[in-house]
Image (cartoon, rainbow, N blue to C red; front, side):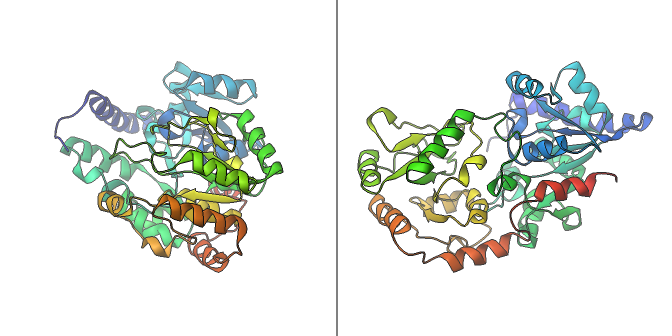
Length: 393
């Protein structure tokens, strides 16, 4: 990677410096331990573990939950629901950030108001069990020195990190440089919706899509394809699939195929010529949809672990396994954590999907073993466990 620092990186470095200043100055005023600030994915959306913990907090009376974002539409939608939310850089957003006792994020303190979070207790809810290496085991170690120093500082500022089981402690301790004694085995709040409806789960997403998927599930079996973001290639995620042939395959089996690409990924499927393939909006929250599907098709995405909590079947399509593993490398042996048929060509993929839709369940014991390895708790109750850990401290 080039040692040149981009303008966005300069802004990030300044934010880190301001965070350190605010942390020192915050000793001059009292932070409110009942004022909790939430944010996710760089402030871009109302998603992930922070979303579901925030929604749970709405049902409790011990705290004042506030969502911060850079998306004014999210602010407006939450406001319409009677929830408190502000633009992260607005006067009110700055004010609550300076007074908040705890901030909850999914990617880092940039999810909220990074400078003004200095001095607050920082809880990283994180965003997935890592199969591929992350953080310092991936891109951070190659960054220019000023950025490395800034991330090292922010890593020390994380007071707590939620995890799903002891199996992920060592990988995340290495990748995020968070000591194990700062980790809390709670499970992920976003997985609560896999077993029950969560009030407000449609906020920040496309409720029309949720209703459409439920209708499809009532008509036939549903496969959902959620591939990993491939930042190292210009190929589209759908280049490895013949959708005309897939559509005929699905029609013969009374099944439907949902596909959602990463928000930064290109998707070129022409849905108008297909009767059984449905493209999902890039920013849709897929978690309310998963329990209405029968099969998850993926490659290296951490969602494979979450899907184990539904006990639905899994199919894997790592058509570029050697190349991807060389670029990202894994924390776990791929064959040890993929309890389902693994296809390397499109023809093998159709065979694997046919077996999952029509055949007996040959991978039930393997799914159970991987689930027990990576989840200390059954589905449900994660948001309550996290909330109770920090309420009334």
